[in-house]
Image (cartoon, rainbow, N blue to C red; front, side):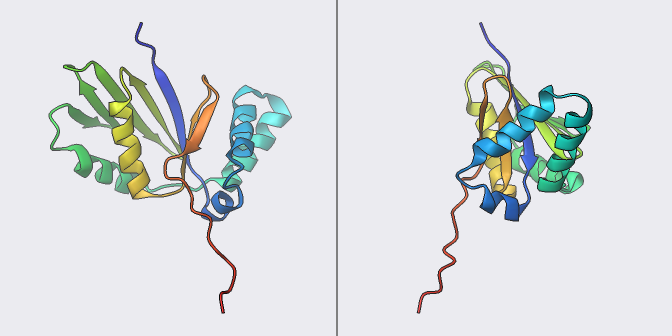
Length: 152
């Protein structure tokens, strides 16, 4: 059986990312709560998510992804959707850019999705990937905690 994996990818505000480095589970819980809540709690968590996330420039990111993959024969792009379909290895990943978030779906080995993760991590260090089906989450590029001590 070839199960489909699905990730929500969001750009976290840099200051929030540093504050929650090592406490990513709290961020994940907020997104998870938003997925399953209704009414006032849905409204509240949606406002909180808007506060801690940043918009990315879709056109610029589409161009960046395109230039990273256009030379691959298994790559295609159309309407904010990038696809890697490696028929030979039966690996498939599709990344769709929406305002405020991206959705990555993948099937087969992790090679195709890892290719997208690598490009995104090189574009911006504060992307957080969330898999609501498996309760897994993490930074695409681990955050190095800055040393704020003044060395004299």
